[in-house]
Length: 473
Ligand SMILES: *Cc1c(COP(=O)(O)O)cnc(C)c1O
Image (cartoon, rainbow, N blue to C red):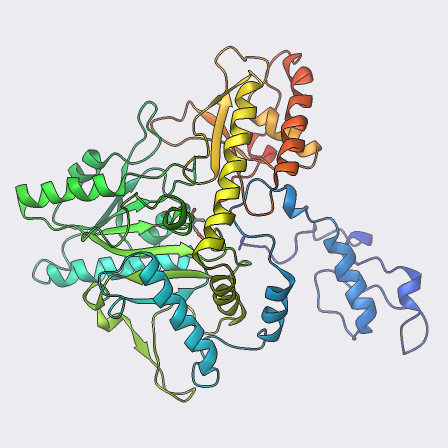
């Protein structure tokens, strides 16, 4: 959540901005007779409104939100079948934590964990452990905590003097910066170099020492959709262990890719088949194809998740072990995940992800053909590609493109890369289920249409680069 200040209007602004405008038509529904009083915006109203009036006011305000189908910035699911919506509606009162009251919801969560353990090739799916979360961020916090606790156990004699560190590419999603900040772990970042926009296995191994709790590998990178070389990372850490005795576990942040690679890249070895991979997370609400609010964290076996991090509470009845940062949480998203698994199966997921990747490849090719752009990735790993302006384009930059596309309704973020490629600014297109070939064609046409004017600019125009665009993870 953004951190909101209580009242965003200026304190001396006592005019209309501080009250909601009520259409006289709505006022007629006021059962108390007379016109409905305009309710204040930033204070709890003194008296109730009729439900129809309240509904209209909220509904009208939300009309100006964007059209999610034209949002090429987000990875998060924006369309599910009506049946999924019905199931979610049926479960909106169910609290995920209340496993004694809702044992069937708990059972569906358990089945999802088992399906993922199987999908990710856990050596023994019956001893793999896992849980649902609110998203990948919470899942990464839990996985990071498990790594940190295992390190603390190994270093019981050195602790608390030593400072733990976590090794990862500079391209990690912000949740890993949060993890390091909140849990006081030193982030050790492998920078980008040249045309390498994610972690280098050898460089990662060189950053490890006896206080490294683990290395994070990303499948795939938020910045450009590329898969990090997980198997090579594990091999580099195997070599490190042979040389130094250091045994550093790997966590795979598969927020997007852990629901893509198993279906489209079966020959890619990135998961629990690699003995060094201790845990994996994914976002059920990204390529897991569920509306926002669900993620998953899995550990290869019980040893990888220290038992003392798991809590049992008995005050809701029952005694189910849980591992989570929060307590109460809706059950609907977990039910929707189970629905999607059941509904699509492996073949269905393969078909849906394949379609997204084909669209990504076609759009990337069409963007390249426009002649003004250089592709950094082609959408052949995650169905996501990043591109920048060609070297001879000087009249405009990626921020101008983002701004002009927004005028056409398309949300395409532009952003600068992290060290050591801060010189590089890119645009990124995320192709999700629902971004059809037809929409993709319209997008490329619109992109082509803004170019003639952009080429006539005297120089890049977007001053407030931050406001022009949003980098949506
Ligand atoms: C999106 C993303 C996250 C955060 O996931 P949420 O489900 O939005 O919390 C973490 N890591 C990567 C690589 C991501 O793409």
